[in-house]
Length: 396
Ligand SMILES: *Cc1c(COP(=O)(O)O)cnc(C)c1O
Image 1 (cartoon, helix red, strand yellow):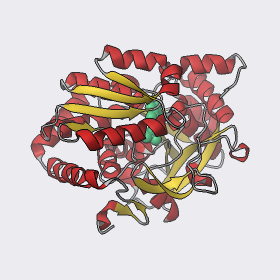
Image 2: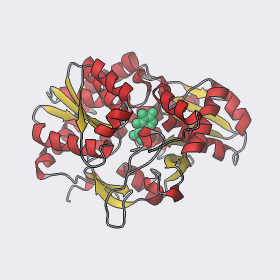
Image 3: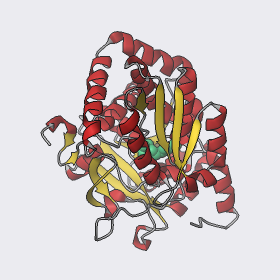
């Protein structure tokens, strides 16, 4: 492929059908124009402030810090409208869709969090909204299906492959190829063909832009470590973005180790994946010896993705960021710890990052500091947590 800017090292690219190449070029041109237009940026920041509720606090978790022996700060994305970071990106992409004259949006969703954020944005901006969701996930995530329908979206069940997120994404891409004239595809993570990884990073980078300034004002200087959980990689790339050039800051992405990476039931694409192509991009993917994409496995639906965004694959290979993994059990222990010591019920996804923060803190000094991206709140996970605590564990 000749389009060099579409790549992060060997990763990224535009592995899509010929008919979508033009569409992607149009999206890229419109995006580049928009983010250099003060009017667009003004609108975007207006909705982030007045609708989403930004900026989110950088909260010093005093009791956790005392217990674990280093300063722990939480970037409170859980306080955003709709309960997670996904809305930051949806507002940006939907404003872009409007600017391009589109009247319809489509999205894929796994657990339903991105679907809910997209349905929310579509209601706000009066766009027709269709969300593709695996039939299996529709069954598992009834609450979010109801929320999307209340917000006016049509949820389309996808019956193919494993009936989950991977298949819903394929269906959304296929539909887009036929309807791009009036339809914008809102991708929910830092994945997909170029320019999506770039756009999602841009719209999530408010997380690190705020955190960097807040840390400088409240504490002074730079944190020693910045970390976030990694599903497709959007909250983490947003948390890393403004620190990538600050070489003294360690960047750590935390993947889901599920039942343990040695069991084969996990979602650690960085630890055990190999480079391959999925959803229009080249990146690290969980795959078998024949190159078939394998099912990911995690107690948290939002980390249950067999790949990772291409810039993360590049940050890993270049050594700028480190990637580690945390099991279901470790994440659930960290989740309960955060409830009891700070009065915050985190999303199970975010609890993975917390769990690694606790491990790392024990090797750090009381003067050092970690910022953890608390990507979302745990209300959506209460049933899963109840099942887990009842000793049923995670059966799949
Ligand atoms: C979707 C989701 C994630 C995982 O997605 P990323 O793109 O890796 O950020 C993490 N946390 C929460 C709360 C989510 O809803």
